Structures are given as C-alpha cells and as structure tokens.
Image (cartoon, rainbow, N blue to C red):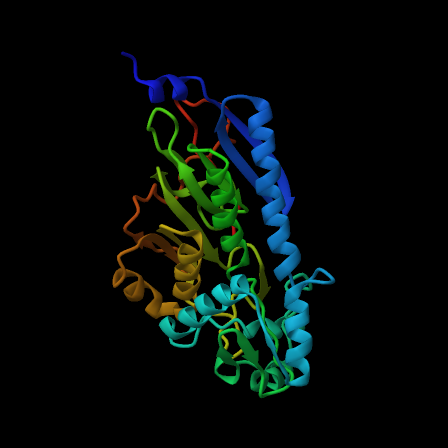
Length: 335
C-alpha cells in the first residue's frame, strides 16, 4: 500500500502572499492543496495580525492599549482580559530576567526621541521623563493592572509583532496547514518544513549591507527574531544612536549593532535578541549562558555566536519563489 501522507504532500503547492501590517512588509508562505484553501487561510492569518495590531497598537484610535494608557495617565486601575494578562505576564518575566532592562514603560521616551528628524534630544528633556519610566512603578495583580504613579504608559512594541507572528502561525495550523512560514518584517515563525521534510533556509542580514547576509540558518520548526540599531538611528558626531533605549538612562544601548536568536516561539526569540542589545557589552556572555542559538555583530564589526556565519560579505539573497524542492533563502526584512 502507498503512504497516504506522502501522496498528500506531493499534491501540495507553495503559495506566497505579501501584505503590510504593523508598519512593515509581511509575507506568508503556505503549502496548500489549492489556491482557494491557501487564500482562505491567508485571509484568516492576516485578519489575526490585524486584530492584534488594532488591539495593542499605540497608534490606532480605539485600541485597548490606548485605553490602558488613559487609565495610566490619571493613576487609576482596570481589569484586563486573559489575552492581555498573558502579554503582561510575559512582559514582567522579561523585566525580571533582564535585570529591569526590558521595560514596557520605556516607550514614553519616544516623546523626545524622533529618529526621523536626525536630531538628538536635549539631555534635560530625556531626564525629565525618567521618573515616569519603570515597570516597578506599576502594580500587576492578575487580572487588575494599577498605576499608583500617574503619567506612566505601556508600550507593547517590543513584543507585539513577535506575538502576532506566533498567533498567525497558530491560525494557519488550526486550519490544517502543516508546512509553511510566517514572516512579519523579519520576525519569523515556522509552521512546519517543506512537504519533503527540507527545512526553510532563512537569511540574516549583514548590518549596513542591504542584500548581503551575515548568516543563513535552516529552520524546520521554531522561530527567529532580530534586534539592532542599523535601520532606525540618528548619526551625530560620527556616533550611531539606535532606537533601542536603555530605560535606566533614556539613551540608546551601546555595544551590539545586531543580535538574532532562534527559539521555539517568536516572542521568546524577540525578547532574547532585544535584551542582549540592551545589555551592551554584557550581551554576548549573557547569550552564551543561554541554550539559544544566536549570532551577533558589535559596533566595531566583530561577529560571533552559535549560528554559522557567512563572513563579512555574505551572498546577496534572492526573493523567495515557489520552488518546494530547492527553496531559495528567505530574506527577512531588517528589524
């Protein structure tokens, strides 16, 4: 008798979809029996990403995050739903495990940091905001969130896109997709390998070299996320000031230009890469202490990690195409 799973896999075809969400270019790569099945799943996955963005964006009117911050501004409290409670639990765990560096109250600092302007903020304006930064100033007793100090605000920007990547992949799996990949602007969650068992080849961009790779990895499951200072930054007096801000000082973290991490969930990979950048010079030994595959590049161009590196001038990475037997590398957008 023939193997029904093998026969089914042979009938699957790769479909790729491009859409925009959360301020970035996003891709879905799904194997399905036909275009209708792929399109239906794609619509459900895109809707899930849109739902999360509408609920937790700091930019969209009517988001639940804005409601939280209205309460925070007055120093009140409110009860939250189980989904939000899960995100808050994760944020508090990251805060504790990072030595108070991963802090979802630090988004307040964007009031004075405008990375599109190319101008550094006045030191006095940064220091004026620091009394309103610190997750230790917030009381979280599930399901009640309280703000004894008025004027604080929360920002899920450090974990929202990663959460959406994991959630979109879960939606695809629930609809019967067993082989595919979700890429939300470089935050990647793998649903499963190609039907023949081959892994997805995923390229990690070489900082400052568009079209070149620092590393290429093979993923059959799990997730990849990257953090760095080479896309959003201010260049002043020959120094690069990246957008990942140290909540203790209000100024950009220094030392590491790029960190990528692999984990079972994109939320975990994203928090690991961000915490490493926030730790600066201590980020590399911290990464080495974890059971997480990773790579990094520091401000001086030195590279390292447990992922295989391609060298200072890795090959340009072509766009993905529907070639399930010899898939090209997928080039994630940079963080």
